[in-house]
Image (cartoon, rainbow, N blue to C red; front, top):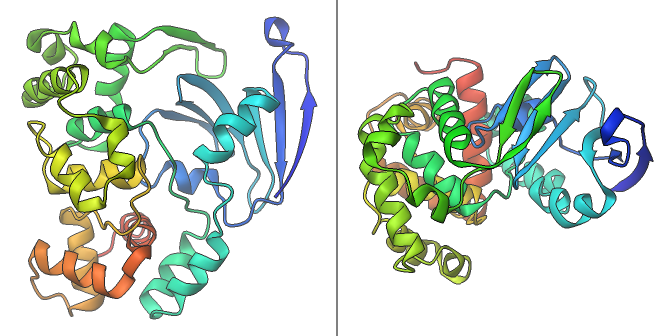
Length: 305
C-alpha cells in the first residue's frame, strides 16, 4: 500500500489534511459500510460517505472501480495512528479471498460480488451498545437510535455542510451511565433500555473489563460479554468480530441462517448450533471473513428470503 498526502484549503479547516491512499486492493467503501457491521455513516452521493468513528468525523470518497481512497478531514498522523488499522489496510484480503473462493462456487460468487468488503476494527464500547440496540431492529432504526443517544449524551465534533447536520462523539460509559431507562426509551431503544443501563454499570464498575477481552480466547471473551443483560450468542459474536477481530467466529442471525441453509443444505432447516459447527469446521480461522462476504451477498441479492 502506498500513501500520498495533500493539503487543501477548506475555510476554518484549512490546516486539516485530505489524504489520498493509493493502491488499496480489495477495498470498496460502499460495500464495507453497507455490510451491516457499522452504523454511524451517511451516504452523500454515489461515491462519498460521511463516517463517524473513533470519536472523529471524516469524509470518504472513492470513484467506481478505483483502488484509490480519499479521506477528508484528517491528518497524516491520524491516518497512521487510527485509520490504517481501522480499515484493516495491512491485512492480505487478496490472499483471504483466494483461500475462501477455492472452497466452493458459492463462496467464489459471494467474494466476486463483494470483493471490496473488509472487516473494520471498531471501538469495543460502541460495538457493545450498538449491537445491544440492533436486536430485532432494521438498520435505519438502529442508526436513528444511535444518533439519538450520541446527540443527547456525546460531545459535539462538528457540523458537516454536505449533510447539513451536526455530529457527536459516541458517549463514554461514564457519560451514558447518567442516562435513566426512561431517558433511553426516549431515544427509541425500547426494551433494550435496561440492557444499556446494565452494560454501563458493569463496564464502569470493572465487572466487565472490555480491554481484557483482547487477550482472551473467543469462547472466554464471549462468556464475559454474556454477563451483560441482553447480550446473547449472536450479539457477543458480532461485538467480538467487529471490535476484537476474533475471526474464528461466525455471527448467525435469521438472515445468514437462511443463506447457509440455501447454499449448503439444500434449503433444509438447520439449527443455529449446527450452522455454527459447520462454519467453524468448514471455514476455520477465516469464518468471520466468510460470514461478511456471505451476509453482504445474500442481503444485497435478496437470497433465500
